[in-house]
Amino acid sequence: MKLYNFEELLEEDYGQFGTPERDEFERSVDESVHAYKYDRNR
Image 1: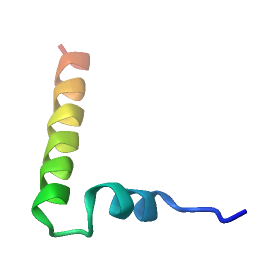
Image 2 (image 1 turned 180 degrees about the vertical axis):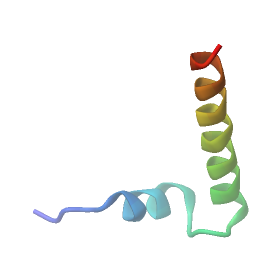
Image 3 (image 1 turned 90 degrees about the vertical axis):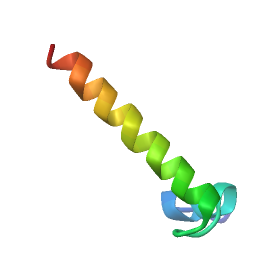
């Protein structure tokens, strides 16, 4: 059984770091984390 790290799974699903698809995913995650932290601190 081959084990994959999280970075390998991201590259498989969203492409390598720096590609438009991956950049959009990273931006979406950053916005979601920021919104969560903002709501939690209110």
